[in-house]
Image 1: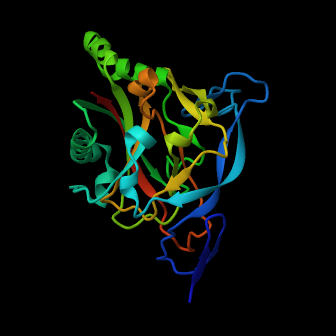
Image 2: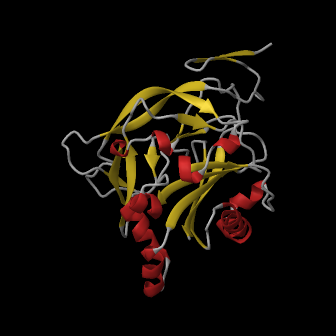
Image 3: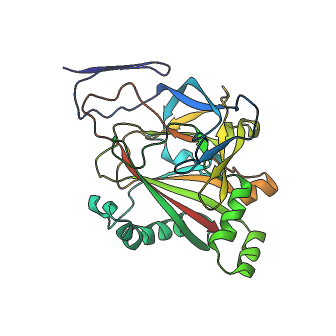
Length: 296
């Protein structure tokens, strides 16, 4: 008979039941930002770096943190207060094989995401879905779960995204004068509960702006910006245990209203993490995140 001992600050895996779903508070080591040794501007290359350049030039620091489970408390969190929101019982026409094709993702899943955001986010009037990433936790996967604490956009990068994806320049400048947000919609590919490499996220209400460091995100044809996150013991970390295919986690990466008025949250640090309670033989984590510009 398998057992798993769990406390709010320590976990120990003793289970051999491959169907076990880790739940409840846990603790784990997360990877945080450390500045480049030479104090140069931090950067990260998307894809292969130029000859002689490292993939990224900044350092990393491991810190063990307590991570609380929001399962059963989903309604306590909002995009405006925490920069994340948990949604349940979401109808879908997708199947597991939908996500084997980018074309099917755009044809079947994108319309669902657009409708969900328009229905869920107060004031939303226009949605532009500008890309998606499928992550699979197996060695051969082109994109694996990211195990470094980060925020996907800086305010400057969000503004650049509007100009990049709104092709009418006059419309783009008009939209930039109103409220615009970048929201990621995260879900597992399978209907089976997530067992391994769950996503941890820190409530924006607990994150000091001084903990966030702009990092150049260098694409082959342009340079964006993400944010590295320095460790701060005041950060409050959570995860959503056993997420299934009819659940959606909204992660807000930027909000122009928060930047201008300071009355709403702007961003949510997040990362995949290894839970020591993960059973032997657990399903690999497979997920998709769709990134959206939300206007209004």
